[in-house]
Image (cartoon, rainbow, N blue to C red; front, side, top):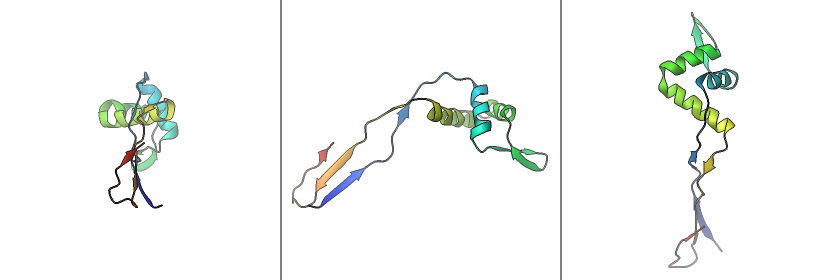
Length: 97
């Protein structure tokens, strides 16, 4: 029998974490490929530089906390949805699993 199967790959995760910005900055300096300009040279960003940037840029802070949480926390995920349709039956309904 032939079936058409459709699913979504995206999953929303939610987690609450207690972590200070210095911990995230230190982790990012070792893990995330962030670079900074020092004069006219590009070099890996230090934890202090990342912390300073996190204080000045809430978007960067939020993204780094998100990456830290994904690497360290156990998120709760919503259940995936899969639709299976029997394309051989003329009036096939959808069965959700």
